[in-house]
Image (cartoon, helix red, strand yellow):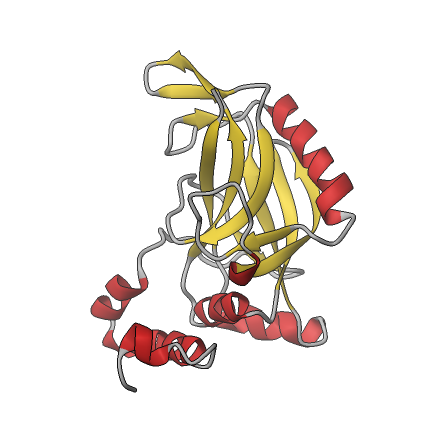
Length: 219
């Protein structure tokens, strides 16, 4: 039976890299790095066979990327449908490096894209997560393998990485440091100076549809 499969990898972008990407790409923020990994058990206990992932990546490139609609959201919804109101980025291209799917991703000037840009510009480590439909089969205790009926839907930006050793970085730049992702609230508690990140995000949301009072109270 098919189910929604969500698996995430960590990436790292520094504020300096964001600024450099904008300079090199006429104001656009474009990040490159590992989108997904085949033949490796992730923290969800799932393994994606390379032949299955290659098939789906090829199909995704021939349709979504070619037609400039390889969109993804900020945070994972519990749905197989991509909600255009939450779109934050567009995948521009994919390739393979061994068992790694390498992608080039443009952060879009949408409300969610602006929040994503603010987070990356503040040095917050996030993850990029595959979303797909498929079934799994147990191959050993604590390990399941994704089956032939898997269908890749998109990649989303999220805050809970599930695969170690992978990252993304602005196109043409080095990877920087790799750290575990943590919530914005936790980081603000660890370093009060980073409370301004919350304020930046709040300001962006408050400018969208006059929802500030509803979400945050009077500002």
